[in-house]
Length: 207
Image 1 (tube, rainbow, N blue to C red):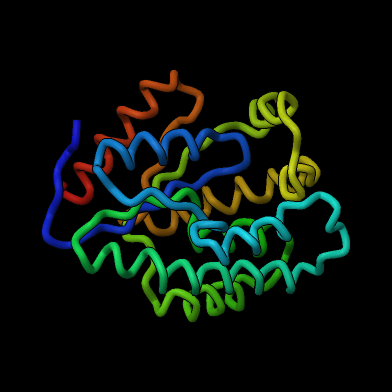
Image 2 (tube, rainbow, N blue to C red):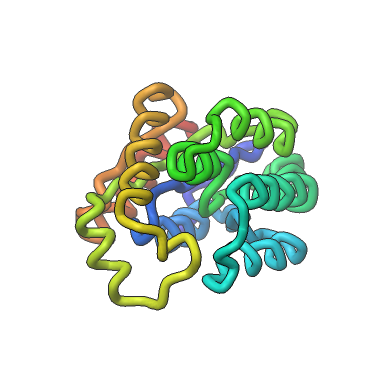
């Protein structure tokens, strides 16, 4: 069932650590809203090429700064080719990850200066950040159990301390900007999580 449209498209992002279920729930929310469903990285053809480089476990030599800049390049193309055109025509956009992942992963996780990562992301986005961010929060121990069941990419192979810093970074950003962020308990049953996400989206954005 489509939940409705407004004249102006709304930009919504789902965030969380690896294995939290955001890809599944981005797809479910996108279908419910009849939205354009996309992802960062890899939401465009060019972005998918960048994603391949970033996620390949063989690329162990990739510098943290280079990683951040590649992601920013993906983001700039994503905004230009997909996000802005969709919003302009009145379509909602639901994205599996956004610029806030750069802050969590390259900032909190890798230890790059947060303000620099933010400035690069803001430049890539022309200042157009998601207006609603759904954070699916799952304890690191449970995330590790989930990740043990699948082949891991370059980010997923990082150690538990890295993933703990990423989760803490997301939590800190959500606490600092409660008007933009909604935190959802990702340990609930899948349908309960989906319902909570839909309810939060309708309530916050009025759609």
